[in-house]
Length: 226
Ligand code: DX5
Ligand code: ZN
Image 1 (cartoon, rainbow, N blue to C red):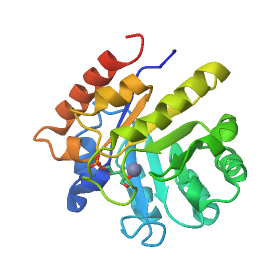
Image 2 (image 1 turned 90 degrees about the horizontal axis):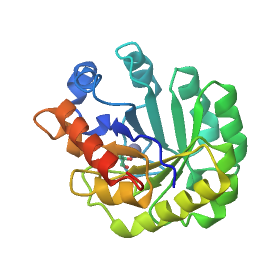
Image 3 (image 1 turned 120 degrees about the horizontal axis):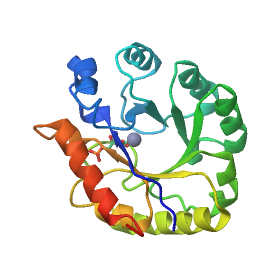
Image 4 (image 1 turned 60 degrees about the horizontal axis):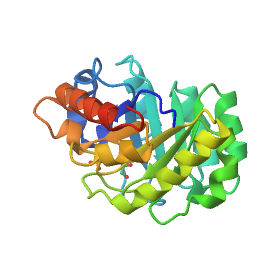
């Protein structure tokens, strides 16, 4: 297995929304990406933030944005996030009938393209599509809310994708999202994930930057071949 150094992506869903720029700067020197959860009250029951917040926040930090769209009709909305300067734009497989076409649109707009797989969706039908993507986000909870309990059984999907990526020499980040914390990140890393979203574990901590560093250390030491 050849797993690149881990990406740690704090999720601002767990931050104080009245002080977003400050909360982002608190992890600026420690994190790799900033994870932005966009929810539309249709694809998921929850409602969070959208394009205007991303546009404003873009000027407030140097961190690359990892935008996670939990929305219906991503073909209509996703390219706008690429235009707003997002580094990576991830949309849900369950919400899109032509994921490869949207991945092409996102890459053409200058972003990396990400595909997200929710809790109840099997990974096998999507394996052949992976060369069109830069990131694959495997939910380790049911998408929609922060602060849920990590579901270890979902790491079987990570193992399957890691084998597929290594066998095909694909250039793909395998990202996990949901319940990632000091007591769960090692199992996710050992399964072959190499990008880790953490909301509560970072912004629920007294020192968010220190929490990011700790997660990184755990992920590095648990990575296959480390
Ligand atoms: C939930 C979001 C996650 C969420 C994770 O649907 O996609 O990114 O912020 O939060 P924690 O780390 O608290 O589980
Ligand atoms: Zn997310």
